[in-house]
Image 1: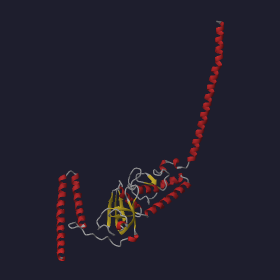
Image 2: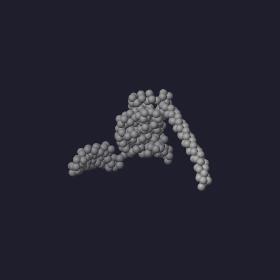
Image 3: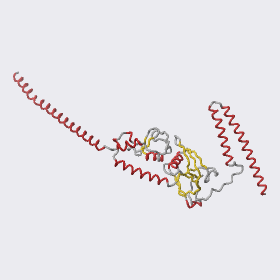
Image 4: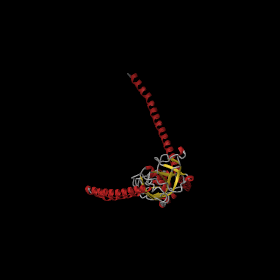
Length: 351
């Protein structure tokens, strides 16, 4: 029994140092881990500070109000719209050139009420930019903007955008007034391009043909000069201008990504000297001036009848339209009979 107790005491005594050693090792490992973490944290803080120092003066460090949402760089020659969104002059010009509804703010689609090419800068924003951006970065942007604007100007002097629509020969002549409403995306783009360029576009009565193929002659077109343009919120455009000259189309092609917009050069060697020959109207057809009068009378009837219909007075609206239709039949019918009799008399005289 005594020997057993002594053996147990010896066993306990021999195991105590091992526990102490394990505890010491664990403590030392924890100390090493803590030191490593501190070193890592210190390195991270040091690198973050270095990155912050390296980013000083770049666009990422600027006030967000001084950044353009199109190029994501600092505003250069800033323009502020009525909706209070601001953009670089060049960015706004490029956005209006590429988008059919370029007359709208790229951010909120509010209407742009001025020409980005000539509108005055937002002097308050420009002053803040000059204070926040280093001179060398400002000079680099100035050089880039100047070069890009020169390229855009050169592009505007190239092929003309081409509008294709069959119209009356009376309006398809030099000096004629041209009033058009553009609603197709490709022609909304045409209106924007022409208005912000040299204010000219071509009007052809059919899609271009290939000159010289199968004996085809160069196709005629009317060169139109814009005098006014009104761009609606959705991008549709009402334009008014005059025919400048009858020309012959040269090279013609559809611009990629434009939704089908034709571009065409003018063949100066084949420029017509006068209006196109007037085709004889088919027997019994109405004179263009007669059709214009009919259209105006119908517009007047609609202007009187539509308000009545909107007020719930459908019967009054129908009466207005019926009276207009009867009057039109009376006027147009009498004129057609008169023209027919005159034609018969002329034929009899020749016989």
